[in-house]
Length: 485
Image (cartoon, rainbow, N blue to C red; front, side, top):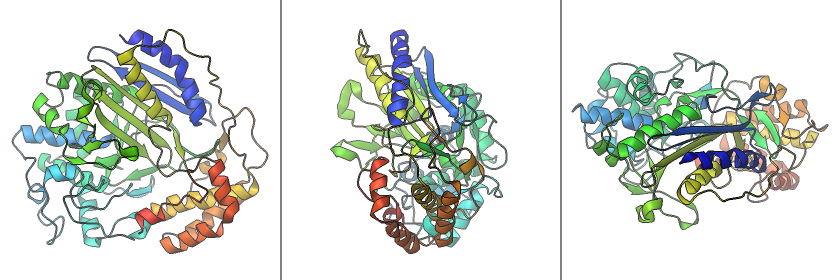
């Protein structure tokens, strides 16, 4: 079934990478009996390392379904229930005396009463902090991480509020109930049964396999290596894996959807893919949250899918989907984060486009002929100048030191590894101007008002440049208004 799809994908994938300005893309496509892969471009531009389907990268929110599967295994074993109050399966008093009564299912469906967040990130060299200690500390603080705690940690439970921290709390329950570190537990009970040989959890206790992909912060076609980060909320975002391993997990779930026992049984998977609450969706398209999974509208019938979009700041986007009625699944990763847009939607990212294309063609068939496509990486946006180098520095500093509240300085590789996607390097890149911009944003961080003022001071020239880089409007893109409202 997949021969024609993969042959066509080999032709289409370089074009998807080129038009989205993505240095490298890897894809895995599976049925319940086959698993095939494809890749194009570079895992690292400076070294010229090719991207392959076995290249390991931070998988961000693809970790969330792993935590969901681990908890559902405990439900199957009778050690917990979906309607169990989460404080009953955590160390006594971990969330404080005034924590709202929420269930495990509410956390898994993002209804647990935590404000929407991104990633509680630290520099990779920072001391490790276990998930249970992290949950306790955050509740003692009572504030979210973003912009130094501009928002409270909690909100009213019940409404949908996407929360990596909330899934981290669920992962803390897995660790507490099993008596073993979260990473060790999911390696033995999720990764190993699914055949995920090169997958790990970056919890600070160990290191992901060397030789992984470099993530890039992209301003148009100018790419700067993202600083290496990790998160203490690792049950929500800490997995490192390859497209191949992610495909193996989806294939295992696809088999379970067809009645086989896998990591969990069919009834547990059915609970995970049952709509729990509506999710905000662009363009009026219905979308729902299951238990650590994102669900399309069940009214799509044969075209219904479930899966997860994932990202890790500021250099990786993933898309993973299972079409159970088609007996097909697809997952892809790309190492570009479009800094002109805070969110890189599936309809604009190479991974999202590749997964949608593979799923659609697996169902409808591949066209007999494909139009000629130029898949070369090339300049399509503004070339850097000393002025825009400074603007890039301000925006990178705002994202790292402001939004994420990471105090550590950026590593030298961020400037030394900067590369364009064309055949030649431009003359206008100014590393010193970039570093000045980062330093100014770092000095203002994490204060959201100072950062907001700094963004406005960049002026109309910077706003028009952002539009050239792909922003949806002529304004400097800073997420202050969402995470520090």
